[in-house]
Amino acid sequence: MVGEYIVIVLMITTMLLGALFGHLWIEQDLEDTLEGEVMKTSAEWQEKHPYPQVLDPDGWDRKNFQYSWNEELITFDEYESRLLQSTCMWLASMWTGDADE
Image (cartoon, rainbow, N blue to C red; front, side):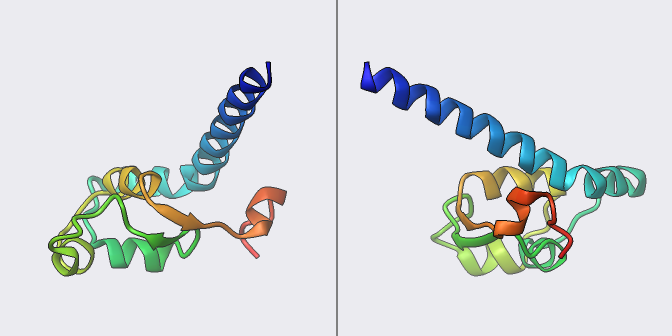
């Protein structure tokens, strides 16, 4: 019984994070779509979108992190995919809808 509740809570949390993440990035996604397939380094994407801030970059190549983060050109979709695989720090204001502050 308790295990079922934990699974339900985890599913709801995952859905909420997905909805929040999509909401925060939709404007930038549309901007990049209008520009075509924009390619930037992960460091440039992180600078443009400081939060969520990557703390533990599990989504990037750890054996060649310098290249993977600072030199490799990737699309926003690829950055987003790698971000979702990593440990990140979120601002509390992101949960309240005041992410621009």
